[in-house]
Length: 155
Image (cartoon, rainbow, N blue to C red; front, side, top):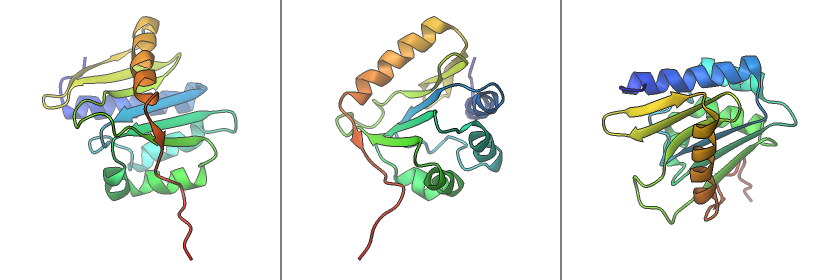
C-alpha cells in the first residue's frame, strides 16, 4: 500500500531495480509530468541501464515533458543514449490531473498512484491489476502522439 510520497518513490525505485535484476520485455510509465518520480537518481538510471537491451521497449506518456527536462537530467541523458528503445508520447486531450499515474512492468510489478495529493496508491504483482492498468494506458495512448525527441537538429 502506498501512503506517502516516499512510499510511491520507493515502489518506483523497487520496480526499476527488479526489472534490472529479473528483466521484463517492456516498461510503461504514464503521468502528467513525472515531477514526483525519482527518475534522475543515479541508482534508477543505473537500473535502467542494466535493464535495457535491443529487444526491449520503454514507453513514457506525459501531458508535458517540461518537468522531466527540468528535473531529471540524468534520465534525459540516459534516454538519449538508449533512444532506440525509449518512446516518448504526449496526450494533450486530457486536462491536468486526468492522466493516470502508472508504472507497469508486465509480468513483474505494477505501481498505480490513485490520489496524487495524499499519495495513495498500490503496488501490485497481480495479473488482473496489470491487465486493468494496461487498458487505462491503452486508452491514453489512442489519442497520443510522439513527443520529446531525443535530439534536436539545428541549423
